[in-house]
Image (cartoon, rainbow over the protein chains, first blue to last red):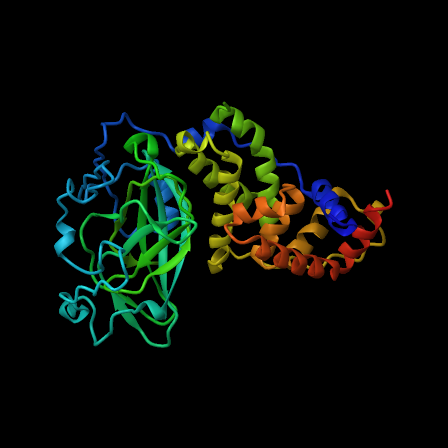
Length: 251
Length: 165
């Protein structure tokens, strides 16, 4: 370190204020409070799927309405096999984020949902979207993070169904299995210029699922519904029990 | 081996202060630290054997950097402070304002690296591990950050004076 660096260091040590309060382990434990755990199998109850990130926090206190439930298998080799999921045949994106050469299932096009999304609006492509992660909050053995897609192009587009989500390590390689799907496919979401759609991403706790990654992930890879080109942003977790909900309109 | 309670007790204060340097306010700082500690708590069994302090800092920085990309959490620049003559006239409140004004002029990633290097006292290699980037990136971002900080007038005065004490 040179003089300037040393002085800067001194200044930061002297100038960083003392916290008004300390966060204790008990407080964190309260945030992540866990219900008695069945081994390996999680029955998840979802609230109204249009929850904004902030509202997810409320889920800690408010028991949710059952919309659908999903069994998340704890066996890393077969995440979907134990989870008969009505959503799997319904729409959208490749559930696996394996090689990006995988063609998009073109079975469902947004125009078939014209009653929900009026007008000829094209499917949002990866290139016209930006991806952001929102607040993470914990409830009953899971962490929920709201991710949002923003339409950064000059024209409206729409999306429907589940994004394909995987975790990546430092080297950018996929670790663990792709996220399974929670709940049913929602209606098509129309994204005007600058508007956002979101999806809720769930990470089960390691203690509940017994499922740990060898090393924490450093990024998350997301295929927007129906797209074959992924997007990546930083995301750290050590758990390999992951699942994702259908996209919804963001407020 | 460190228990999770001990780890939190030892690190909570330092993490909060680091998070304050990143965000300039306690509400955001507490959010950041809570999120990071929650992740550590949930994955404690997996991380305790390795380096939980690196893990928790990585989560902290990742959470901070991704929150920065969301428009609604981006901080607003602070109003101009009245001119001050010298460091010994600064109260601790004024000092923190000067520091925050200087740090908030840095891009988020540079700010994160400055906090890791000069507040957490990590080496370049350790910083690179936490930030998940190369040592070269840490070096270049650090020198850019230092150049920028040196050009902040109030901080310039302070950086000169601290050395004489």
